Image 1: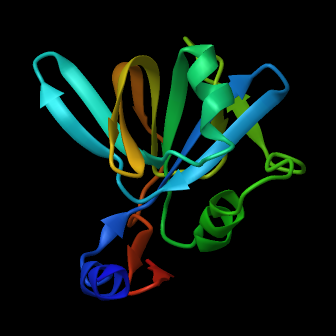
Image 2: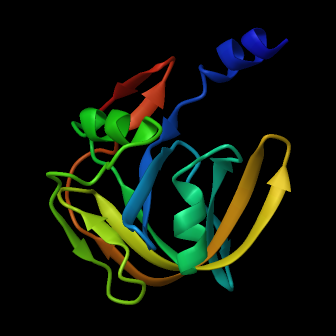
Amino acid sequence: MSDHFRHVLSHVPTGVAVIAGIGGDGPAGLAVGSFTSISLDPPLVGFFCDRGSTSWPPIRESGGFCANVLAAGQGELAAHFAHKGGSKFDGLEWEPAPFTGSPVLEGTLAWLDCRLEREVELGDHSLVVGTPLELVVSGEGSPLVFFRGDYRG
């Protein structure tokens, strides 16, 4: 069932974002294909994170994160953040977000500096919910989309 489930759902396009934060050992980040708006009143956003992620725990501990919405053409950046382990920020340009200090990556389409509100365990993932403290459209163009196992602009 798992392979069939993955195959069928690969036909649903998803936007790609890098969730980044500052942990005790410095910046940490992970790529997600599930970043979304949850509520307008109050404003809430969320994403799903694999419960086995090694990048999420240090971000969680900081109490905030920046959702960097990737632009078409940033597939290599997404793939870089999709891998486990290692220092993902070596050689990358970023600025600290105004409220949480979380990394705002260079060249993204938009970014949201968020306070962590809650995390709900659901199967092998957790739903992470945040309140946006600052929201910025930082680029023009199309978003990066993940579809049928590949990044597309």
